[in-house]
Image 1 (cartoon, helix red, strand yellow):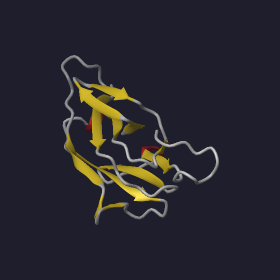
Image 2 (cartoon, helix red, strand yellow):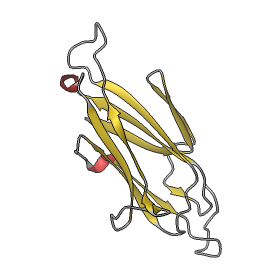
Image 3 (cartoon, helix red, strand yellow):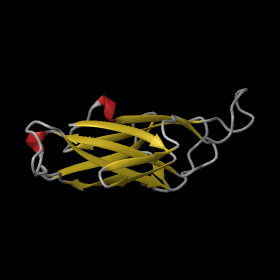
Length: 146
């Protein structure tokens, strides 16, 4: 499978397309803002009409689950894509996915990574790394907000 992922302010998956607002950032905060993760999963032709599972989890700089309250932040589920009539054999099948999250209170100056697994498999490019700016009064030039 091939996956494209993007951090954004907000996203939607409608009628097979992704609609993204404020996309492409990798630094946020320190003031918490709502955010989204837009993903385009391309399912190979030979893996259509199969049930697939995914797991998207937030980890800290050490690779440990990032806790929100006392719980790790995880989004998981299942999907299946079918082959439309008339599609040429070998054509990958698109599955757009949009996740929106409420504001998270993450420590200023910290670094995090969203990691995706599909059917228990992961790749280096199925990760989204981002940093939280230092708190005001931190290093010179630090700007608040996204």
